[in-house]
Image (tube, rainbow, N blue to C red; front, side, top):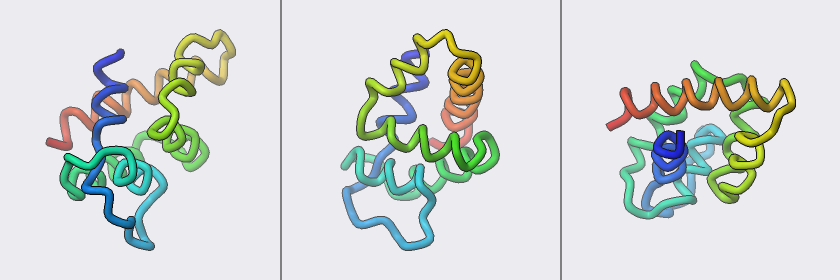
Length: 100
């Protein structure tokens, strides 16, 4: 689980401004890390578009800037948070397989 979060949170780019058409995950990714290629953030956004709904993508994007929020959801016992965490895990696993 921790590995999935690290992959998603570390999947950033060179710190350049995000293109206007970039999705919320891609923009967060680009702002979060200066070592990953911009193509990685685009790939992660594409996986997110297929794995998470718009509300989930916005919530997950905030985790790039504040990973503690992800930890709060992971440890939560609310049904909505459990469901989000399961979908997030599946997203992370798919992104790890797809985006290299």
